[in-house]
Image 1 (tube, rainbow over the protein chains, first blue to last red):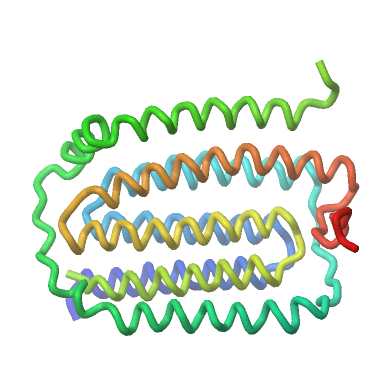
Image 2: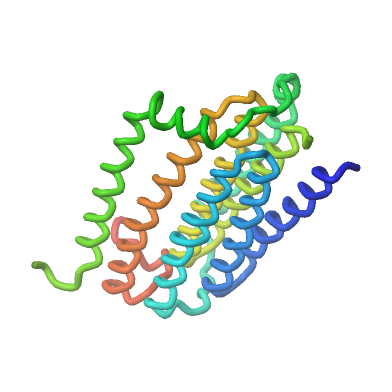
Length: 167
Length: 100
């Protein structure tokens, strides 16, 4: 087994254990810390795939900004251990079969469809961040500008929602 | 060189775990975090395909997904603060005004 495969399995097990921990932890702050583990492991996987810029953005935006926001809100609202409630009948008879159907569909697509993916070439791009910048600011410049509008509207929405009294 | 379908299988596992967390958890903040987990799984698939076809379009899409996730986190957490202030609870079962 070569070194990238070993690194992949270490990071993949880390990500999967973090995701399982997110489900089984009772306290939301523990779930948030588990999610940070998943995000750091995914950043490592992006580095392994040669996507350095995406890895840096993953750490800065997800691990830095979004998760700090989550932890801040959890502490602000003083969220405690969640109370268990009974499942409704709809969840039992509709939700669980549909979740299993989704699982089967995804598993079928992954197992059945990877033949065509394997035929791809090796990654040999030089300075991918430079190419990424060219792609982002030339070919995808209009979607990029639209995202700035989206951010602006999100800022306004967050301020309007979180203010205590109407101005 | 790790085969691409390894990444896709990990992505599917993470997405499935995110779905399970979304369905089974009752705390609204944890449900929101499971959405972020699913977005991360999709990002992993995007980068894996980007590497497989040696094209960078997938990484550009990942940046857009991250931007949308950040906007969603800001607005969604504002809504969560409002719900917590009005309902005095973070349990989604208590937010049932539209239920018959």
